[in-house]
Length: 420
Figure 1: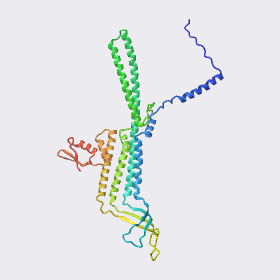
Figure 2: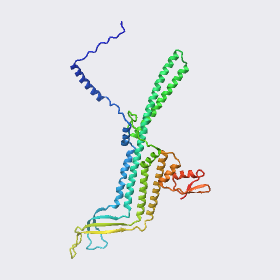
Figure 3: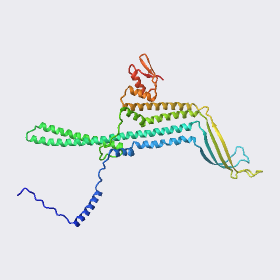
Figure 4: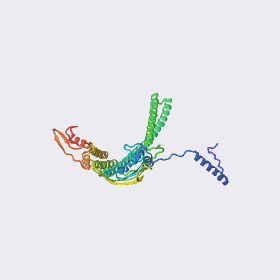
């Protein structure tokens, strides 16, 4: 018997038979394609970021709040717009205090009143400006939330890819240790290894399997975090294929962050809105001038006594035009309270801007004396200080930046305080 293997040739079908079987295979293949599940969609980082913007549960309420905040502009404009109202009435007079033949028994009427604001003392102008600036601040807050959500989406995307790789590595390690354990048991049977060596191999395999379980649990948690941030399940994620353009230097990164950071823009808008509220609160002391007009129709419905020597007027129309001036003399301290509140809100907005700028500088650059100087120049703060009994008294607002300045120049820790 020779060592060669004889292979019989495969019969070639005829042309008609080949086309017939091709049609059958096409029909069966289409049916299988319909019945079989679709292949997993390979999701890249760009599509993940787009899904985060569209489906993030964190951004949907922010968009709704911004849409509701836009209505504050319309509400602020209402005080400066004319009003028109109509009143219809019907009165049945059951008893008069002084009976007279001129008193009707019943009366019906229809009145139309119009009021046109002529001068509101600046209330409407400042209220509209404050509402617009608050809307811009809310829009900047939404942009900041979008940037944070995108950052969280990138982190969740990378965590899933990392944990998938860790699980695959752990499973590969388990496979290698299983092969090592089988080899150790085989060598133990021939007396090449001891029982201790086999036990060590078993322990290493058990530890590797525990590591696989831990890695799978971490992967499950990363997948759930991905669902929370993005709003969809991570299926067949791809490695990122594009890169972001990074600033050339640290100073350029800080300049870009200071100019384009949405949180900083929102803080600045809130400062301007607080200024407008201060002006609006002061405008509450100004007088108001309004033009009024009314058209009144009455009808006594034949309810006047007919024993009169003349024919009484049973219906008629009256038209009135007027100008009303309202001068506040005493309001119980309300405008002053509004001014104080608005001034403190403005101070809080300034504090928020300083904190955001400080956070940007510390995040993109090392905290040093240069960072304090930068923020001092940026906010045009003055830092007069003097030494009294070994302590530095600083006449500045009570801010984190002021405390940083105090800790730099104070002679002992906690020895610096503000002077109002």
